[in-house]
Length: 231
Image (cartoon, rainbow, N blue to C red; front, side, top):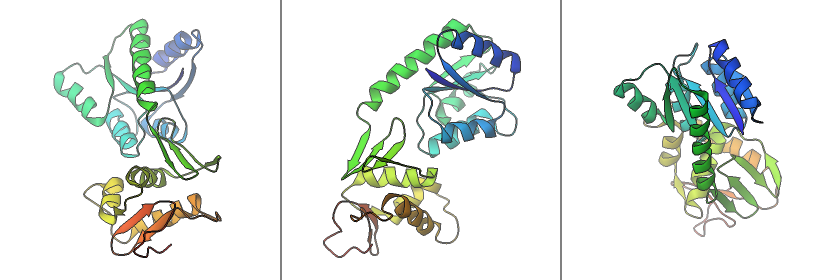
């Protein structure tokens, strides 16, 4: 088990480390929401224990940002808030479970194990493949010809949407919505993200997988669109 603990209460963090390391787990810790978000985006964990009240960025905001980036690592929220509206807020932000302080460490362990078991069951069918491009949605690893690609979160999100639709085209509006919801930024930021994705996925590869569909959007496929897609 590899856990990320996002919690600013040092004695609690120490207790969690002592308990779970004694059971063979590997742990990382973040003292605030910004650091926690960075670790969760850039590294792979089996589960995340996320406090609600955090410096710099509160737990629900961290969680919502993670889900918007397509990261589906199981998250258990810790909080002293025990009212139903608070719990609903946590679940709507994307929490998988919710534990109210104070709590028993054994109960936390059982809940985390249950979350990870369900996640592994989901991951069995969460693998995307187009040609020699493979995207493991459980680990978020992307490989081209067996080589691991290092993608920015926005590039990874675009790739997921396009591979799930392959070989069909995805409209520019759909891709913008995947990144920014109903409030896309001014200017053609999508073009910049597609350029970065192409650079990472196609690069100097002899077979290009990302194709532009004029006046429509983009698609990922082994062959260009028969109506004349351009690279």
